[in-house]
Image (cartoon, rainbow, N blue to C red; front, side, top):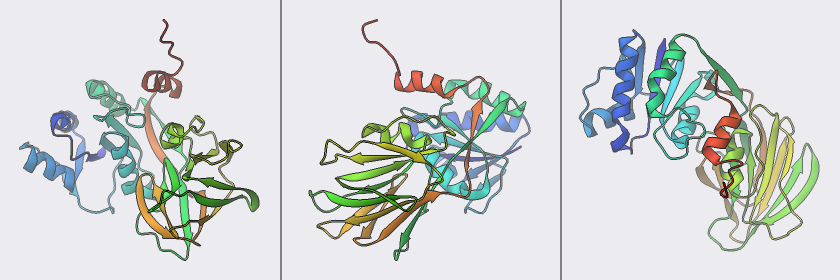
Length: 290
């Protein structure tokens, strides 16, 4: 197999796991291609002596599987590098929570033994696409987790006129609005009171950030319904954050969010279920009285 390795270049204390992984794969006769920035970090900053089969210098690369070594942020960046090419991603968690990157460094040997033996499953995760009418987005317009519309340059709220599948829903008066996939439902959306959705649920959650009205609550809609947003702001601009990558848009820009024509493929262990991760990572259902 050909593996494409991407990693967090700010985790000096945890970089030794990368050398172990590379050695493990090469001992099994697998090809290891490393992202150029991660390679420079390991060799120049950490003084490692590694010999990858190739370096990944652009987004035009091929692989049988991609490895994300870091936290969930690194996983999202890896997903954006892969884009529509359908390369499955496995996440090794050297970050904090690690909901997407759920393989611990201590489980590297076991996890890759299963992968080499074909004992794993691939989950197809829905991805969102953002189109901004009259505005050319500078960055990657697809999101595995969420697309957030947020206020900028002012403490005043913004107004977000929202329509679903061509039908008017409401105008949110809030600090922002988070449009989340099931994958992103345990991320930013959850922190502002959004619901948890199981992977592959075929749904999208719309959750306001600090809404002015108590009558406004999160809503879950079908992910094949198009969402249209028109934003008004006293500062005449606002922020759009796509999986944390933010840029400024001008008032009057009409935003259209729809399901992307491709999915992000996530590698999971055969004996690992979403509910296991929910209990272990989120302490779901834990009772402090016990």
